[in-house]
Image (cartoon, rainbow, N blue to C red; front, side, top):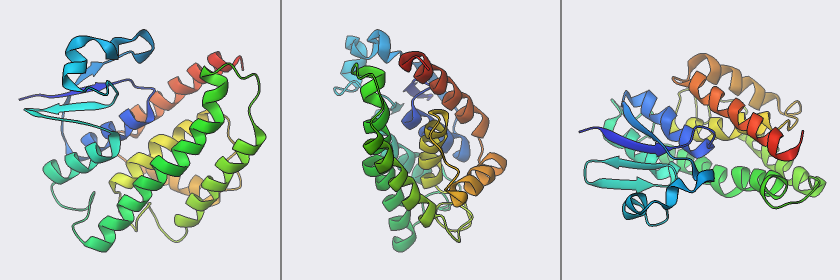
Length: 216
């Protein structure tokens, strides 16, 4: 049976799942859902996902939303080995730590910085919130020190999650020049992460949307 995937390309969480699907060789039945037109409120979608959020994945009779556990599910069920989502408790904990860091700190602080201007009518970006975002980027830069990828020398789902977020942050004209490890990691991802081009297109489309919303 096809695996249905409800998504919007500019959404970083959606792109993280797409990267994991690409890595495990799963072909998704793509169902674009324009949340800005309220398509997520259609009764047939709410019946699938009462939270009416994207990404949402439907694999047979199993429905899951929230991008990070969706990545974990795809890697666990369809991965040819455990490299994307390790079975070893310590290695898995490191992957999950970075996924939670992305959700609760990095992506969260990014949203605190850009969303008030994009969606809430504020006229200027708050420099204190930018400083908090730069602090989070500094932490990520430290986490990447000595590693080829987010957790050691091979790609994991933490790279998919972080790549979707960081590529979007870059398109918001946030200065990454002080974070040499992040910049080096982005180059490695560009060369080695399957599906990088699609993620980059989504990030660039997000950047255009960002600039149009903020009159930049």
